[in-house]
Length: 212
Image (tube, rainbow, N blue to C red):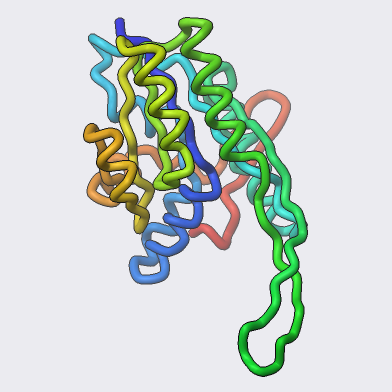
């Protein structure tokens, strides 16, 4: 069996869904995704085994957004907690100066540590030999050095790139020719949406109304 691990660049994936839902509102319902089921839908169950789904993100500073994110993650933990792993980075304030005449300085937030965390996890999984097929869900070309390192150090390991909706990188396409555009696989999103209420004997989580 081909041991397969998914590595989600959460910021890239979520914002791709968000951009897609602006023109296609039904895609907003796909925020409420069963990630393990979604990933399994791409695998041949007779030849591949899903070892883990790693989701790299950072808790939003906005309390409502953070609550929705936690609800999503906790619901996934109930369904398949042993295969769904959250790896958190953090947000830092970034000073930006307006280039227009006003020259006003304002602050925005920038996600930190995610790129390094993804690269470190992929390489460590290869060194520990816990994976045969690595699937990176991202269109961030910053991962090219880590992908090249894996190809050089572990030539028997296979890598695939899944581009999030509304996201694409020509550089990644050239580095790893085995790519899939998730935007072309809406049916897999559709069948992987969780029930509106996910519950066990201890907790109950309800799909946020904003994601209807």
